[in-house]
Length: 225
Image (cartoon, rainbow, N blue to C red):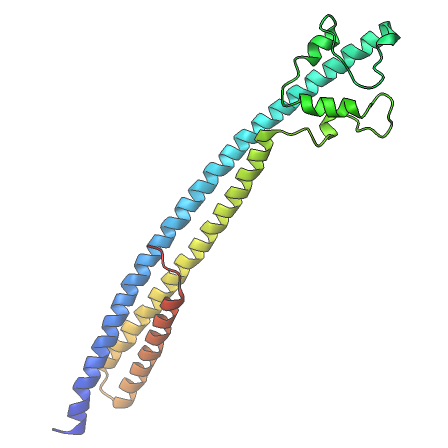
């Protein structure tokens, strides 16, 4: 038996082993690509749901703000009319609502969440203090919980969209790795059919380099289970 006859079966065995690894790597890359595609789809769906909920909360906050503006404007107009009729009613600091008057009626029907801002604004003596904020809406006490919730949901949606983009990139990376594994299968298959030793060796080296590179890359990629 010649040296060539001894080496050839070993090379065939090595090629078969390389092709087996490439086949397993291709299957694993395809599986991971599908898993990361699922992560992407779920993240985008969750981001869409969060944005829809954020829009709903923002709409609710806008409605409450408009109601506060209308009620405050109505109260201010009523108070102004009462002061014009009776200047002694002009507040010299704080304000005590009189239920017998329209202004008192309107004041007592401010939203509970709006009252702290109004009280804080009145404490600045806006009728006498030129440095007082123009309206209660400029006070830090004026808070709309729905608006805060909406902003949180928008941040959550942005984070989920980022997760989806990352998952999409990882899925693409696995697809690219599967393509390189396919090249390994091609080179190894051509090497097994090559008749010239130099051609066979070149194809084997190319397949081996691509295979090692893919395997090392797979070890570095995150895994979705």
